[in-house]
Length: 344
Image (cartoon, rainbow, N blue to C red; front, side, top):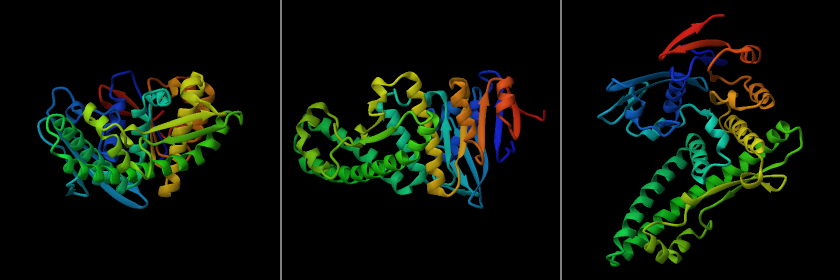
């Protein structure tokens, strides 16, 4: 497929493979599936392996990514024919923003969805954050295993002290990055949300850390008995939350469904703006059948924001609305995993 630099429209019936293409692009940018799928779950039924080749240009630099998935082996990735030792080295080569109907529920969903939102964005923007996140997750797993073991044997207190020091150091860096990210995002999202609501709503975002910032190691020590009884670490970035308020009212608990969807749309548009600000170029935008979930007003606002952004947009059919509103630079019909370019 040779996509246009503007809007690329993929249409076809459900279960034909439209989302597979978006997932392939997302996988090459983030080293993970947008739906959390394992490698073997992304390989076609009846096949043992899959291969993705993607050529991308960012800031004038061309890069070829080859990603090989195998049901039985660890994935293999090459960048410009050079094998990567770590999947995290794939992050930052180019940037994507993925928007699906599930994202419209991010405001109402569990906190883990909002932490994932922060992690995906920050990992693409900041290599140091990626390393801190991996270090934190690894240390957290080790600390939790030790907590369970210490239920039977309390002789590992000095080892727990060492884990606390390392966990707190990485945790403080994660929370600092997430707080800065939230503040920067809020600056952009306020103007977007006011425009979406004709100036009627003021949207605010608040980062709520899962531990008292600057005192995480001290708090880990103070909550140690409770952690031991639970066999789990009860404070830290794994408990972080983002809160949203419209005109001072909590959107998650008291906002209407329309307000929650508008807030989610504002967040995605702000994400695009933040990437432009940080990287000096827009991300690649992946829109997976999201138009069908938005009313006419929100559709118009979203489509009006696509100028100058390479976009891959999926839908089930070229109905009158899509023909009129989306001036696609290229169109493809997707049938049973096969792309056919539509020149009409």
